[in-house]
Length: 178
Length: 284
Image 1 (cartoon, rainbow over the protein chains, first blue to last red):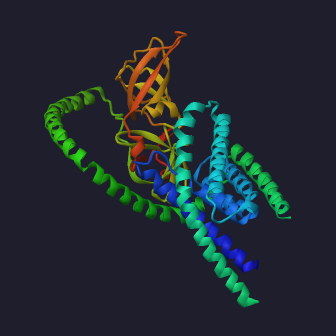
Image 2: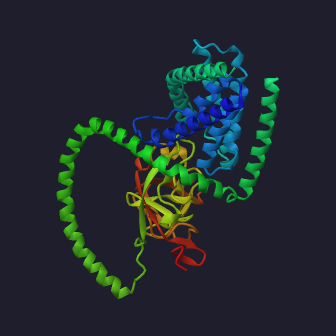
Image 3: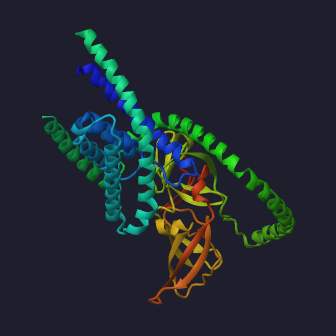
């Protein structure tokens, strides 16, 4: 890939993550009929990791974590770390990527969500000293996983279509240049 | 080859984040400038999209609640009648109170702090942390540690400020502890946030002396002992107070006045409590 294409992609992913983050924090929590909110930036992270491989997964994870770290006043870097690892992890499966399969993305989403929530649970246990394991599982983790899986069904397809179009444009440009 | 590159990136990120976490844990203000300038660009966008979200949400809610509202309106009308009557009675009481206050030279009247209104523009999407962000910041005179009210009761405290936004940690957050007291007996207690208690819409009250006069239904207000919360702000009402098994202290639950699930507008008190008393920042 040429540098121009890479730079354009980085910019697009960054804007996409920013947009998803804003929707996630400024719109969803105010819809009071939702029991929990889907984790959009996590969906973006594992989707790009899964489609394009570990580097892009880490990149999206980095942006996603950056947004979270800028929003929360927890120690800076915590979410960057979690999301980067998630992006890397889903990138490991990119060689099995097939555009028509939805099962594997859903499994990846489930594993990512579980890893993400348990990482936060562990962090909170370290800072507060209390675990509330059953409570957290029932009231926070499971609703969030459920909603995120539901939204994945929709968002994953959309991202896929958008990416296919972007790839095609990039390919055409590449051919013209060559 | 690809994986090796990613692994190297990952190692770099791990070291980088570990370093940042340690630094920001030890000295939490190090990264404030970064958050400050990012907030400068993000807040207007967030504010706009938030307005859109609220419009959508309100539209849907309006449809759902039209009928409920109709019934409620009838009930409220009766309530208004009752309250009007009560109000006229209280007004005469108030006049009496004023006279008595003058007699006692009780010039330090709580709850008359200067306030600034602000809108909530972002909330944590996950329920792990109970923080939210408001659309007023340094340029509106907001500084760290200012108390935030909503619906007549204490909601939280400002933990971080940017040029045009501020982050508020609500008192239902696990990390929140507020020194409070019973308005009736002035006996002190500690109001703690807890995600389990908040599931029932409550907070925990602990550390009440076993001999203290503390009954269910007592109004709980912030205590002058608190280092960051201004005295005399209503938090909520005590409920289920009972003596602990060790017979040393009493504890119970607190029903907050503010509705934490539906905060859209808040009031920020523009005075802060410091070791040298209550001051208005920027006026010295």
